[in-house]
Amino acid sequence: MTRSVVVTGFGLVTPVGSTVGDALSALDRARGVAAVVPELVADNVAVSFAATVADFAAAPELTDRRRKYYSRSAEMAVTAALAAVSHSGLSGDPLLRGAGVAVGVGSGGAPPMEFAVREAAGDPTGTTALLVPLAMPNSPAAALALMLGAHGSATTYAAACASGTTAIGEAFRKVQYGELDVAVAGGTDAPVTPHIMTGMARLGVMATASDDPGRACRPFDADRSGLVLAEGAAFLVLEEETRARARGATVLGRILGYGTTSDAHHPLAPDASGAGGAQAIESALLDAKLNPAAIGHINGHGTGTRAGDAAEARSYRTVFGDACPPVTTCKGVTGHLFGAAGAMEAIVALECARLGTVFPVGNLRQPDVDIDVVAGSTRRIDPMPVLSHSYGFGGHNSSLVLSPER
Image 1 (cartoon, one colour):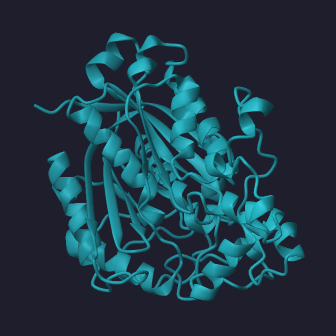
Image 2 (image 1 turned 120 degrees about the horizontal axis):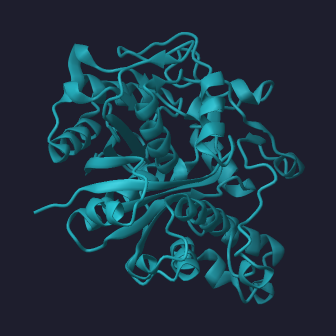
């Protein structure tokens, strides 16, 4: 028998703020927050703008002594996750001892590795002794488990842009089937570095117009030119419902279903048919025991790449047909948080479902896909379950069905 899984805490560190209210306000304005990054300009990087976390302040628990072991990605993860735990009312609770941790990563250990190599000027003998703990892809998960004193599973998921969604889904499974009673799950990434930015630009997937960085990412728009890279972290606290209610927790919503598939198609390009994405969505709906008509809106992936947007739209048409619910995406405003994107979007999707609103897609002026993409202004809907859907380089597809608390 499966168990009911509820959400009791949110935590964010993003380019649009560290609270859900700040994020929703920015999304409602539908204007991107990307800006020129001086360090990228100094390194003559071809694409020198991104959406970064301005004036990031690590959690007080990350003392100077501890911070030397952790990369920016790990620090953002710990800060967002501790905020989620505090929001849930679990800080200091003995329940955390048996909690599990699930962290999605995109660039993983590549950023600290890049900085270490640059600092050593190509001389391996100059490499810092702390390179290994800094660059381990599992470092954020290990750091979070340590900071929480959580002795349950501490697992890292690397599914590129779908990593945050996958981490939440896999943690949901562990609570659903009784392996854990509490899980802290989400994603983190700090990919705004010279080498990663250059590599992404050479792939041809990034928007390159820099005269107005805030307008550069235009998901589902005929004038789109690619994605804008971003950094951040987002985490949720998941709990088995009976135990959560017994401790008097405030239930923010619940996870009803999860589905994940692989395109098995190409190292980078999506399957143009959208079949893999559609299968993940259908799997999540089946898990949730819901039919497509039960979904009130979709928080989609929507990166602003021509191939990705088109394949995504076909996925939705396959599942929902002419009755496709309103579709939105965060990335026109926030940029692409890569490993953290799906986690942030799950939080936003659940809160929008609770409020009965769907924010407009940032920078969208000329929709060119055959689905109902929200444009111009926030739309009112009935509070209903929501689909949060992610794609990842390599053909990863992950979907979550979430429901507001009634």
